[in-house]
Length: 312
Image (cartoon, rainbow, N blue to C red; front, side, top):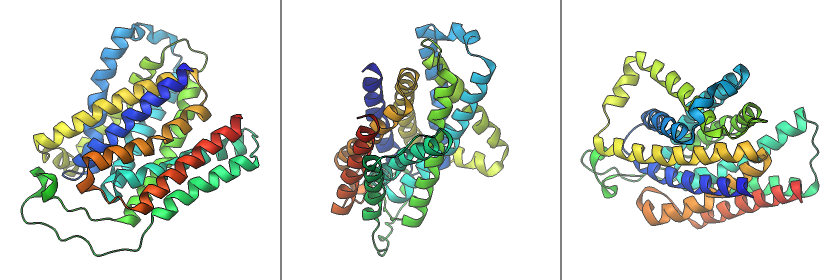
């Protein structure tokens, strides 16, 4: 039960992260957003590991654990987060969230192929609903909104034009699934049979991802993306980074005491949280139609049915 509670807290935090990221990527690149949110997570995890006492238990994590967590960090926080932010920039957070429910069938497929698990009719129907939800949201291309005069990089929502780029958005949302769907398996393998060291595991993963991102600064164009950001945009990404840290801390804690197949579906219910928050906060930066709302509820319903069929 504690694992379920941690997973739900992580879900709400991820939704808050998505809403703030949506505002940030309206003014800066997805790459810059991933850079800031990952780097700010390292000192936060250091403090959390220090307060929890887990920082002094580094020797308990075996060498293979460090390798697995580092791989998970680069895959999830580096590659997956960039693809996710790129998708949010192109189609909005409300459309991205249900697409990422595909991580559940992805995990089921891995278990089916490599672990010999079976798929029953309830699971098959759930997977079908997860696939149908995002498909409903795809709309015919419309003319892009006229771009307003002035510089959008530092203005308000009314100065920003949202141009729905469906091909780019859905492509990068799907690419993020591979990273987000694989990393929990690596985390679970690294932390399995270890007693309450999840926060330190999160620190290792974040540090590996941050190191990889810092190394990319040798590319001049990459440095330019970072230095071009205004403070107001950086502040949005710092807020998003805080909620991402909070979400990841509870996610690691959930994965350390509960199966991946329980934690992942619960996190996908965040599409409903994201819908409500986006409507309240980012209404001018999202394109929320009846198709989007219907697609979200169908996808979440499919996720719930899939988990019930698997463990019912």
